[in-house]
Image (cartoon, rainbow, N blue to C red; front, side, top):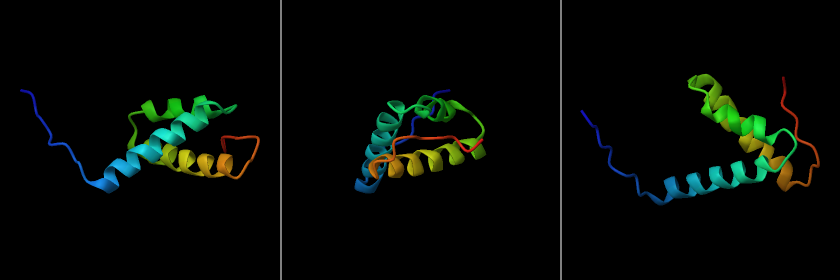
Length: 73
């Protein structure tokens, strides 16, 4: 049985997806960015939320002209 979910076309949802895509694109060019973006594929919900936090913080650091991005563990 195929379940079809309606598309969420709300403006704030699109803004969030755009900011997520920008963070992934920016961090994938950094030293450890590929490790952080590969963590998004993990099926553990706690790890997914943690990775979203790393993406947000990493994007802020890159936007602030930090030259290195490190994973906390």
